[in-house]
Length: 463
Ligand SMILES: Cc1cc2nc3c(=O)[nH]c(=O)nc-3n(C[C@H](O)[C@H](O)[C@H](O)COP(=O)(O)OP(=O)(O)OC[C@H]3O[C@@H](n4cnc5c(N)ncnc54)[C@H](O)[C@@H]3O)c2cc1C
Image (cartoon, rainbow, N blue to C red; front, side, top):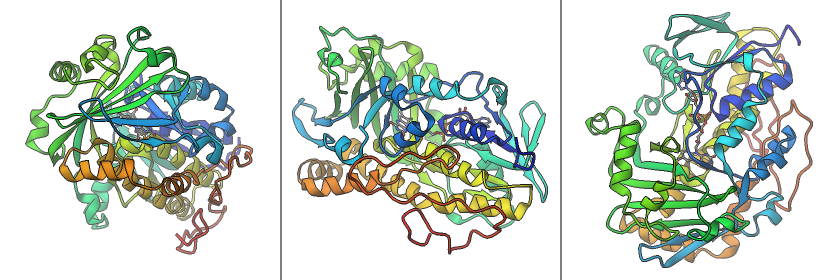
């Protein structure tokens, strides 16, 4: 290990924090991970992964393992409340064009696969960070038991209500350095109930025997809901029920404080929605009946892109700086892409000079911001088409699913599949498919103290 490398503190052992830890481990960069939970329970039962992240899994040597945990999605069918098809998304050409299939992977199993790649003594569970402090020479975090840790760089990978972000933003606001939009609360306009069944009876659910994932979405009628179902390996079914609220809420609203969260709230929501129709026939209650209680979660779906990702020695990644709706299936992919680009830049650093560290962290934000912004916006648009319940959204849905010419759909899929950041710490892998892949972002070289606007972004344009 090079003694001159920066010492990194990572807060949060979600998918983003874990991938960063794996890469720092490979690079021989000293790091520690602090996670508030005793055991991380990945939310969102199934996860979409595609050419935006599979090349990196190939670099890591886990591509075949991930495929074994997944089913391929070639078509998404959308039904109305009478179970009539109102359109669909055809992804059957994706593998040929992008070189990689679009997969629905079992999320807890993917998490365990990644967790195994980080030495146990580097991950400190049951450590809740409350606040941060930094100066010219060091950054410190304080935990809920009043203990502290210190390093050269602090990474907030602690999710949508990031304690690192809140502590950093308080300090920036006091100095008058926090942009207005970063001062506003996160809002959410959907709540969601997700679960994964035990192996389902093929006589009742024959689709579980199909090799490909049967991805079907049912739009509710009287209640403003959409119910997404996926089949995953092991004859199991993942389901996501999304309910659209009449108005946007934030955690500071009375309506939020009066609503319930946690296991009892999950159970009472299950009771309220059990008669909703399921796209696989029968009701959602039939699926809930074969889903273990601890595999059901009630979550809210926030959506926000923060402008400030870094200041001094502190940097944010994943949901902590860009929270997107689940409709695009891109939140975790973007958290992992952050980890790749951030670790590429950390790997160039030597010593503990604040100006070099700060420039490298800014360079990471410049390299990633526009891609995260694209996905926050794309997820919002897809959310309108696949979850929205207003008349305008219904109109937009029919338009999107039926009247966009095939060449345009192909163009949109090609565009979003062109971004595939690779780790410079691992041997690179050659490009697959016929889609033109964007050039790799170059990390800020060692000794540079300015990540100025002259820095080139991944697609060669000026950032
Ligand atoms: C229902 C659902 C379905 C989804 N489906 C997909 C999908 O198909 N594809 C996709 O790409 N994305 C999907 N997402 C989004 C994805 O889950 C997130 O974007 C992703 O998990 C973000 O990763 P992260 O590491 O940034 O944060 P998180 O996964 O939220 O991890 C943050 C970690 O930090 C810990 N932490 C929080 N505060 C502290 C603290 N103060 N001190 C210490 N530790 C702390 C938390 O316990 C947690 O373990 C879905 C999300 C939901 C809710």
